[in-house]
Length: 318
Image (cartoon, rainbow, N blue to C red; front, side):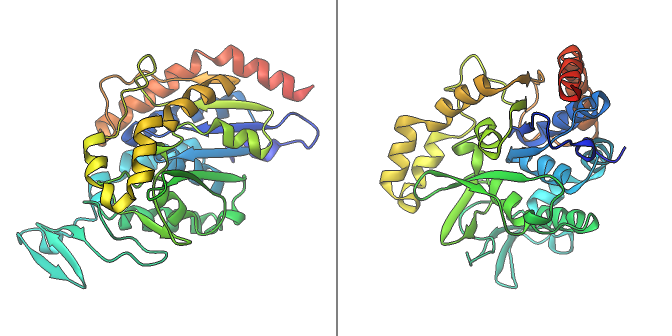
């Protein structure tokens, strides 16, 4: 299967796909995509945040759900995300090429335009390289070369404002979108310090609507729907970074919590809302066994919406 977008017609309603953030739970999104493909739903626009930006960016590049399934289950994600160097893994402390390593894990570096550095435990360079390599295989390293228009969401940590990335190198855009504050190194772009978009918009249905979507299929990985004020972010940790953020941006974010308001609004924007139940999985639950289980949960949850998907398919064919 080459991808549902290849059957797109110019005169039918446009379909937007929304992929929410949620770390390793992103495998469930791939399971949902399998069912969407089986239903024959064409996708015209894609927006994603954090892990959703990885899934969405590669899907927009032309990878099928089956190909993404293999990627999720075969990759050594802990090594990819931490950039651990096995050659110096036995050394408690070492500085190499300007980077400080603790037992092989990079923990310090300089922040340069278009590069990764600054605060955060993990650098994420290997996962960036993986995304770049995979995108190149499909002939679309830059976002304007993608087969489906794609946007990913990051946040300017200094001003606590949402940044929608629509151009530039796909791998760097995705790295910015997944840079959880205090965990991953931020990405400097256009003078802004970019971090995980979940800080502002973890379910960017409004983005695909702005792109032109008439129908919105949303895959939500957030597991605290009934109590949205339970943020995945540690507010104490964020407060400790106040001197870096600038007190105005931090206090405004903590006080107003714009991510909660936007999340609620974006759920309501969804035409088909798919919410895989993953209560015992957290953002770090990577591993082949967990991956297979979450893929299955995503697929099973999507099949509960099969009648909706088929009705949508019929509507698009009219």
